[in-house]
Structure formats: structure tokens, C-alpha cells
Amino acid sequence: MAEAKKLEETVIKGITLELSPEEAEALYTVVGNVLGNRGSSPRRHTDHIYSVLRRVGLKGTHHGKASGSIKFEDDRPKSANW
Image (cartoon, rainbow, N blue to C red):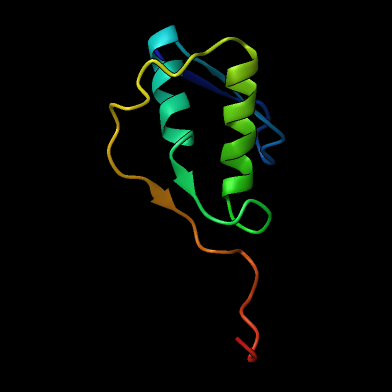
């Protein structure tokens, strides 16, 4: 059962998630199917989450069962030269 705790009342300094093994595997699959620039889009965050979940031993039991992906646009403002 997923739970979330807000650590600060006015400014969120961090969020702690407690996930079941099944929920963690589902999240691992979702963040492992994100596209976009690793340096200038939200993908940099999903890549980090993916790495942390992999370090704790997740294997990706749902990989190959997901279809499609999420593609983030760059956070950088586009210049007039593009």
C-alpha cells in the first residue's frame, strides 16, 4: 500500500514514499520507460529514481510488459537560433 509523508508544512524539503514490492516494481517500470534529454528535462530525475530502485535490488519484472513511453521536453528555453 503506497503511503506518502510531507516532511515540512510550508516548504517541501523532501518526500518519503513507502511502497510495497509490487508498487516499487511498477514504479521501476514506469521510470525506466521515460524518454527525453538526460541533462535538460525531467528525465534526469526519473533516471535517478530508476538507479536508486535498481541499487536496492529491483529486477524489472514488468519490463517487456509495458507498451509506450513518456517523453519529456527540454526544460531549457528555446533560443531564436533553433
